[in-house]
Image: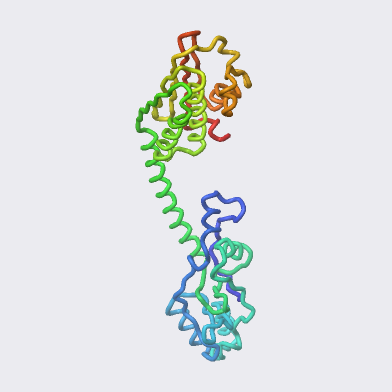
Length: 313
């Protein structure tokens, strides 16, 4: 296999952009190869193969018996035969028999590695039975990858527009809570998670909103006389405001310390009251504030940004 005409593939299987790497490892060689292969017979004269190359403007012809690949004639083989007066010899006397080939079910990354390793512009592609299935050239790879990347760009643009439209839509939700209503505790958190998923929010953002929502909801159920939780989905952020009536918090700073709890034995027996509600809410919030007065209830405001650094935690 002496063909040296090739087009370099400016792609590395190691340090290319992730979208390119995903394509070259997901795609198979059979997805990219040319299946309409022009072939020759080993008994034909080289002059006949020369005419085939000229008529079809190709620089290499696989030689087959049945469907099995037995050799390959390149344009350089033809030139050499012309120089040495052997153009009327049978193909089998001049064909390359030690052929470097690829399997059709290999990842496309294998073909790219071969093109970067060997000085050839095309490789025969065989199936598992070593039968010729197609030819893959460096031009095939470049053309196909460009088309796939264009499709991927269009897909990402559509997804981005869909996500932006979802994130830019306003939504207001409100739920009420009641003292010791354990049966419905968590309902508000479940509904806000559902609403965010329907709008294709980042799962990490949804998780942070769910944590803040659940902690504030449980706090109202076990510590207050009842209240309400309001959600506002706005462009770029989610705002949670939890307001209750009840005893209020005597020392807000102390209440924000991990492990600080005023829960009674009944609440602790249910598995709550570990003193992590407000600290957890503050931890996942980008903005956090609390107002409370003894005997007048408590209002907590938590804001979570969609593009916050905390979303990468």
